[in-house]
Image (cartoon, rainbow, N blue to C red; front, side):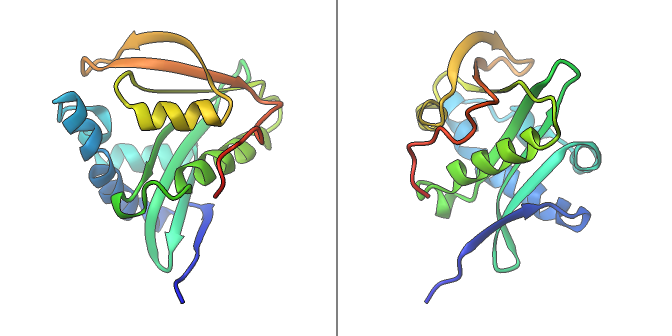
Length: 168
């Protein structure tokens, strides 16, 4: 009988595992865009630690192994930005990304004053776009990242974080 995946707040000692997971999980995105200079692959460990000190960071664990991560923060205008959602490649396609997304939305909504959630993904990232649409996100714009990747910006109202049709 296998272990179940649990989601909880990240601890400072998780930084290295998150860093390695992020690098592994975003390889597929880099390959899709033919660009290995995307921000999740070039971020330093110190920069990630800085984010962990200020942002809401959640991890999915299978035993002691970090197999998923996501982070977010709430701006002064009430917009919660969600970023760097990643799942270990061997566990992708089993609803873990949806569980992490739902968990970070709930955590960010718990800060009070959160009016909407915003995230972005590359325009070619169909599986990500499908996940976000199922979670109730709608496209609100586009931009080009500093690494040259064309991003789709998506949002949804914070009043509906449980609008999922994805089963975990």
